[in-house]
Length: 233
Image (cartoon, rainbow, N blue to C red; front, side, top):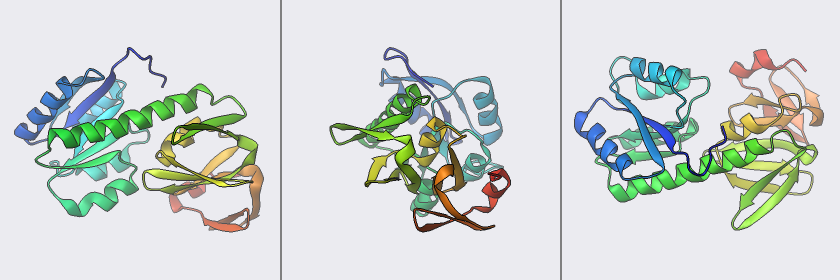
């Protein structure tokens, strides 16, 4: 979704601790870029909000009643950007595997909240830039202060490294700070397909194919179990 410069990013809070929810609401109210659509205390009500509103960012507590935060996130087909909030360190790795923007430990300092929002803003602006040119034969990626043009025909495969991706091309590999799910949305499904939670491949670059693996540019890439039904080319 393309966001005009003047438009605010819509967010929701999914948090069953009243004090934590109130702190987040206060932080959000201080940011001119954010608009709080609603608050809820469980995944059921959060799901209703996601179906009735276009949400850009979800603040998600892990320890929710009935359905835990990560279990809820795994069920969403097209989740918004997610910032996880929790009092437990041990869930950090799983959170990044689910392409969350950031992982905030309670009690959340305002400075740490600002850092997370900075990451979110960077990612959603990068996504918007990609979506604007999704129907072209190339994309532009930002590395440092440079805008680099990559021709889609030159891409062999894209590899996820938590909040970063590696775009492997004919000439070199480009590392970009962006979840793989976001660049997937900008690619033409006739040309590219996701075969694993960590890999998107160019269909025309497949050299060897089996039930559990595809070889692209000499590298054997696994096919994820949940992706097998959609692989028919």
